[in-house]
Length: 174
Image 1 (cartoon, rainbow, N blue to C red):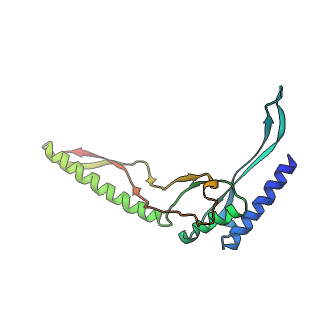
Image 2 (image 1 turned 120 degrees about the vertical axis):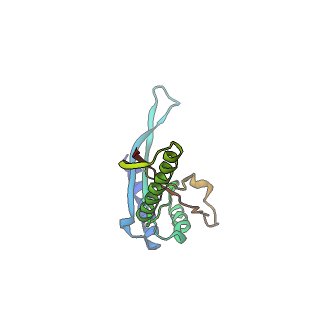
Image 3 (image 1 turned 60 degrees about the horizontal axis):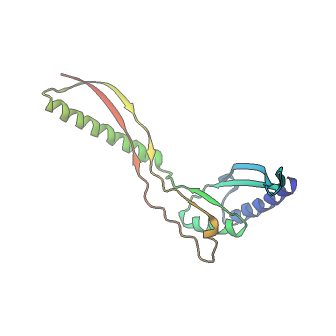
């Protein structure tokens, strides 16, 4: 087990070093999974331990979209064999969500007024406001890195982020 861990540690140090060389600060890297488990030889009965496998996942936060491809390519060149769960977010997420929340409240109020009018009533006092699920659309993709391991630069497309806010307004009717 110690041999497998040592090999994985050396490999991860190389990956971290290659990412630092791109200007990524170590504070933007975090271990997100670390596991060691035996692999078995099932050709014998009973099965015997053949060796050990180490999974060491590193989550990397990249501020500059332009270098994402380089981050993946350098990590692969340094020995990474999987890239999983690429996701995109915005540093302006809170501000954008506040705007979406205000728009959702205005739209809910307008719809409530239309429905009240159609029912022959008017909106009365606002009794409650409930926020629904917060969500931001993400582009997620998972790659088996062997498909990317070529001399060509990895193509990463950011797409669009969609921010939604859901609210429920309860009014008295007059």
